[in-house]
Length: 144
Image (cartoon, rainbow, N blue to C red; front, side, top):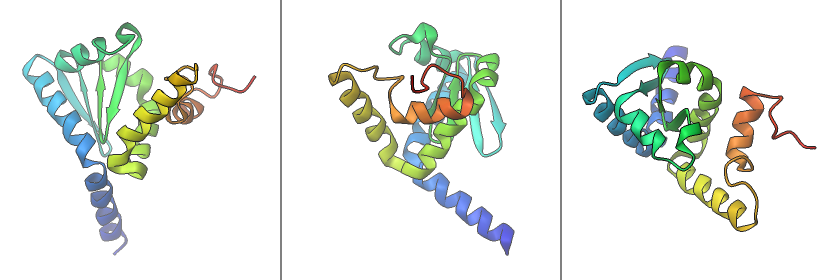
């Protein structure tokens, strides 16, 4: 019974985060057609190279972006980039599980609010601060 309940809960979390996951799966599948690769880590699919790399490089400050999470998918520039960023990106997976389809609008609105307030739209974003707290507790986001 315990395993059934866990499986049911996992299915609910997947459905709740599915709009973003579908975007990630679409980008990942295009990436596979363009020479990229995929791997499964737990209940997350990771894609790297190909289209995933191109998408990340086209983002603002793309030369510094190593990976991005969309629901239960993570797009990375390379396999090594996924290894480096996995802990950070897994925090975003859990955030998608918590916020579901509201995550992307909430993330973007938080970034916009911070930018309008003259702060760093990425580093000061509470979603990113949570991820950096887990993945790199010594990061520059710590209160000074």
